[in-house]
Every structure is written in structure tokens, then in C-alpha cells.
Length: 219
Ligand code: SAH
Ligand code: DHB
Ligand code: MG
Image (cartoon, rainbow, N blue to C red; front, side, top):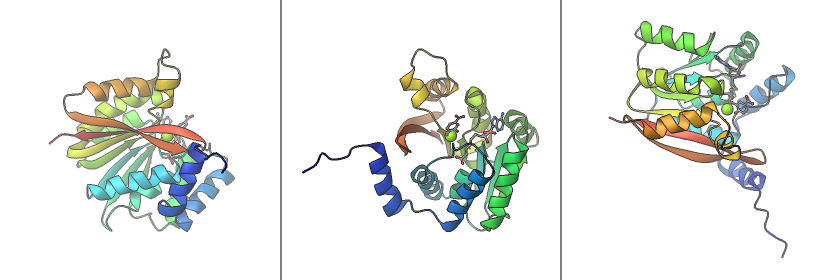
């Protein structure tokens, strides 16, 4: 018998093939991102399905995303919403936002998914100042240097019992432990935060691992 292939890619292929299958619209979103030359840094299908399952599990009706890119993770999140649910997703880059809007349109998600362009910190502060209705879930996935600020703003915008998630929380923290990194600082703040109960879950991405921080804002 040959050695079992314990590579992350092999595990991810099994999960994705069985239980994290992309809808045609997910594939179209990835193709649109490739055609438009966007960086290939979206979540994997298996991580996208995890986001979707978490949103469903808490009955999310309002979701905040920080870092839209082409709308790939946004599509996994928005499809977990009820018909009258809302995803507000924040993106700095106008070109990325255009790709995302077109993808949401093509996927029939335009009524649920709103892309707001600008620096996320300014958008978040404007939402807090305007008394934006609370969110059930926030997914942090923009510039890593902003992560601690985004967590603080997400804490103000998410309801008690809601979830704050953050992508890319493992490699920087583990592979170069002496280096400063926004994700590592986020992990430390979440771990010590009196209002949060948190865990970092390894997720499969290409041929390696990344991490998803999952934090509950306690009731
Ligand atoms: N969530 C996406 C991937 C996001 S990649 C997915 O998985 O499909 C990170 C995105 O954050 C990029 O599109 C980048 O332009 C955006 N970004 C970087 N700095 C930002 C900032 N200060 N405010 C808002 N978005 C920012
Ligand atoms: C990068 C950003 C991401 O959100 C990600 O999931 C992977 C890589 C990056 O900026 O390199
Ligand atoms: Mg990411």
C-alpha cells in the first residue's frame, strides 16, 4: 500500500468535493476575479462553507464584512441570510468593489449585499456614529495592520451573542513568531478580552493551513 497523502490539499479536496461544493455562482465569482486580475487571496470553498454554516447556526440576519475583494467570501455569507437579510461589506479598492457588485448581481444577491467603498476604519466609525443597527456577525478580512482596530469597531457593532470572525490568523503568528503582525496582535487581544470567548480554528487553504478566529461576544 502506498503512503497515505496527508497533505492539506488532499484533505481539502475531500471536504470540498463532498460537503463544501461551490454553486455555479461561486465559480463565476472566482472566474470574474481572475479575469479582472484581482489577487487570488479569497477564502477557500471549505472556509467559505464554514462561514456559511456559522452564519446559519446563529440565524444571522445582518452580516458585516471588512475586506470584500471580489465578493467570494461575501457570496458564502450572503447566501446564508434570509430573504430580508443584509450583508454590508467594506472595501478600499474601487476596482475590487466593482467586481464584487457585478458578482453579487450575477448571483442574484444584489438586494442583500451592499458594498461600501472607502477605508474600512472610516466606514466603521461612520456606522457607529450613525447608530447603525447591530450585526449578528462580523467577518474581518482586510489589511492585517488594521485588525485590532477592526475588532474594536466590530465589538461596538455586533450584538451580544453574535460572532466576530477574522481570517488569516495563524501563519503570521506561528511561522514567524518574533515578527510583529496585526493578526498576532488581534489574537492576543481576543484571547484576553473580557467580553469575548474565542478560539482559532485551522482552515484548509490550497496546499496549506490558515486560521479563522471565532469569537463570541458574550451575552
Ligand atoms: N474577504 C475576501 C478577501 C479579502 S482580501 C474573500 O475571502 O473573498 C482583502 C481585501 O481588503 C482587499 O480587497 C483589499 O483591497 C481590502 N482592503 C485593504 N485595506 C483596506 C482598508 N483599509 N479598508 C477596506 N478594505 C481594505
Ligand atoms: C492576503 C490577504 C488575505 O485576506 C488572505 O486571505 C490571504 C493573503 C494578503 O494580503 O496577502
Ligand atoms: Mg483573508
